Length: 250
Ligand SMILES: Nc1nc2c(c(=O)[nH]1)N[C@H]1C(S)=C(S)[C@@H](COP(=O)(O)O)O[C@H]1N2
Ligand SMILES: [Mo]
Image (cartoon, rainbow, N blue to C red; front, side, top):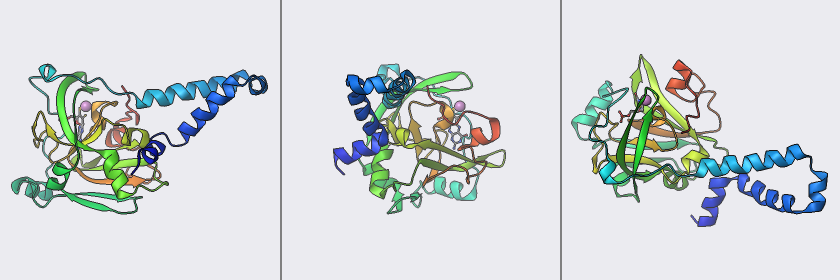
């Protein structure tokens, strides 16, 4: 896919709006007919979009935390997941479906050999701890483009292998975060395959958000137009059950 199409996907209508905004605010005749409120709204929107696309800070190997806590689920307890662990995820496949032209089923070797990004970032958990780790994985945007994301899709949902207090763990992000350059499906941490504790075989890194959005044990990725029909309807396990914010930006 070309850079132009990618950019279009990244900024969507926002890019068009910003172009129009520049023209409008430099034209005195049009400025006269605008209320102050409308101009202020456009300006605020410009800053909001720019802010969502900014990169999270990246660190060096010297900054890696000697201990990176394992938190939440440490090992999904289903028979299916136990079988995956026993055979080294040889028959595991990531499904990508929902509002896509071409649903995908990808093996771990396919994901490992796909183009990848490595980043050293700080993970911030709402419970009050942070840790710096190195993550390697496939940019989510790349997979979504390969699957032919529909123009009706608004959210990307991550279905996980584990349950907490009997409820399935899931999370979701919007397309700005899905196509953010640091949003990857990590298969490796600190240069080694992801451990079970940290979410083997695949976990999300969405670096502009808090720890609970970093879904571990991803089994299926679903593109949807609305979050309302999924589980509690609020877009994630913590959002449904604990009232956490859906957008956990940092
Ligand atoms: N599937 C799944 N993903 C999850 C969790 C979980 O319990 N299950 N916990 C979340 C929380 S609250 C945090 S802080 C991080 C912890 O990641 P870590 O175990 O690699 O430190 O994973 C997040 N992703
Ligand atoms: Mo967390």
